[in-house]
Image (cartoon, rainbow, N blue to C red; front, side, top):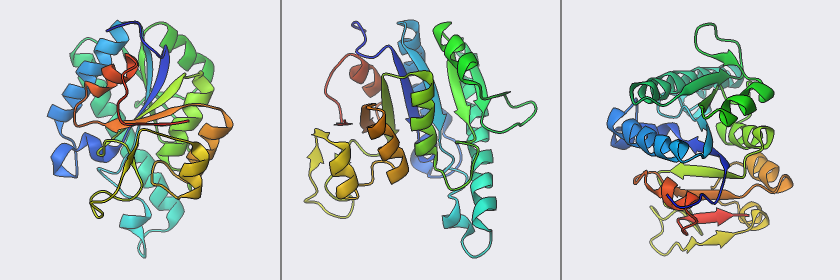
Length: 237
């Protein structure tokens, strides 16, 4: 790796991405590939915090609508992210990468309660930090949690690893004429209602001037390319 463009980053991994092609559950081939690349970056001195989604286990109101009240559904989603943290952290341990889990709610035996100063210290010591349970509050997505943690730890950028290779003018799976943006402003994302992150997360990133790089997780090496300064996917700034 060349001299990294960003020293400290927040990597957001969707739960669906961790499921690989299965759509549900965990694909350990996919997780192993991601962890290998994260370890390479950490070994080069990049400080990495990770927020994981829980969509591979639970899609919130989409699964709970009509059966589970929204607050309970969101809390179930928080538990799903904790399960993902445990799985990913265990793979990190197997490959010899120092890792810690911090959760936004108290779950004894899962990880430490989130603390900003402790997280910053562990990052500076070379540990990969897994942030679980979103923000700890219902009605806030893991996208918002990712931006919030990025602001708190002083991240230089948010790396948004998804099942799609950037930000498009429309859903490319439904509209073959959709155009991918190389770069786009937060204002345009909000005004055009583009599905990058939810509006709360986008506004928080805009207010704190944190660039968001959206790229495909299908090739985990894209993370190295982004850190090397190569133009991969879409940058929102």
